[in-house]
Image (tube, rainbow, N blue to C red):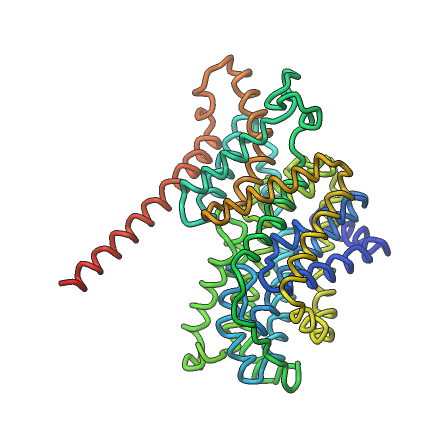
Length: 505
């Protein structure tokens, strides 16, 4: 079957009444939680992960995709009206969007963000649909050593991309890998690191870990920052709709942001923030009104917001085709797949094409729902910003706890939620990234399994790991991804020291 036929099949599945209902709930919940200040898409998806637990796999993942896209969009509302980016990718939106809101143009800023997100999401989802089958064909020739090399690449890129220190990133990764060893060995059936606790024989529940590390730990960290100056919410004055001049200045920025954001999101260690900053720099360079940048240029909202959402769709390319998470949100989405015993990758396209293509098609529907839902209801989302911070943090902790109990009714799981939530808080205090822990926990058993298979086939010959051209290239890219950030950071420190020395002279 062709990609068009698969996509049409997926649309038929995604447009079933219950799946449409799940998508609507997903985008509504995602937007509602994503709008709240200090809560990014990763925390949003982790917090709502237990909500989908009782649904069937297709409905659950469709709701999950809606939560993801809704959380991405909700961050733009907070950035524009409150000047509080929920994540690093929304920083650029806040630069120009909040200036527009202060100048009484918050409506057009929200409109260009919403329409830009829709355009970028639509184009990027179609690109995902047409690119994915080619990557799947390539990945189907992978053997154990190629898969192990791919896992190593995932470990290194996630560890290097998150946080300001590669060492801290690798430390977080090894914490996750150590936790992944807990339970029964898949090949020998022996107990490992269970310490005589029966509840640990099945290993550590990924859903509990994701909610603890992102929702509980992040909330405790934000709440512990103490009272700050009250946030000023910019009122939306005048019309929400864009003028003809706004349209003329925005549409090219939407397309350029999409072209920049999608490939960067699809690359290992890409990251949405890189695409948004590149888009902002491009728009500033190409704008006929460069003097407006820093004072509320609409292109500075349109381009980066399109790049942000295109990057979100780009992240799904390696996740769905290779099982490779390239962002914190993608790591939690991987946990969502695994709670149904599904492993994203080339075999999923072969064994369960209806689910995969239904999920891809649902992204198109979720994009349209977000556009229809968000502009008319912008007043409702603004009211959510007035929730007192103590109520907000307490509500998140209660919701995360109830969600975990609903998914895993066990006192032991509740204790694990508390323990790992405190661990995540301590890690955040000392600037250790959280995402590598989740990636290590999820991909650790898979990497171990593929390594042991490769060594069994070669009768213990370690050189088999580099004799395959594909495996050798993947390991080489992993080594480059590990070394390059160290070199760039060392060079940056050297330049800073030389500038300090020059200023002292």
